[in-house]
View 1 (cartoon, rainbow, N blue to C red):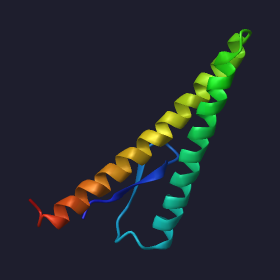
View 2 (tube, helix red, strand yellow):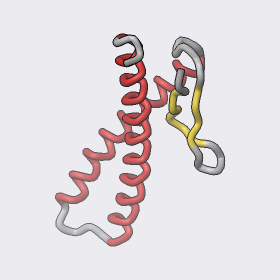
View 3 (cartoon, rainbow, N blue to C red):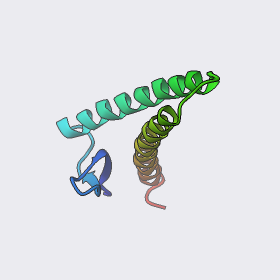
Amino acid sequence: MAGRLLPWTTAEGGPCYLVGDGTGYVSRMADDIEAVQLDMAEDLLGHAGALLAERRVTHGELHYLAQRLTESLRDVKRVAESRGARLAEDKSRYRGGD
């Protein structure tokens, strides 16, 4: 059984993993945090679209937006990797480990 990539990192920025059956407290907390991260990404995309539609946007505003988009993309990528790995593991289990 491979560990689940969690939606947060270590203090040094490294990945955190959880080993288990996916039914415990930490797994449920990870699910909740992933949902928050995805909702925040959706909100940020809406804000980015509105900001970029304005004719007068400052360099500072664009820089701040780029920083937040980068953070959000990093979070969403981690969620996708985690979910993709779990799907592959489930598929492998269903096929009998092929």
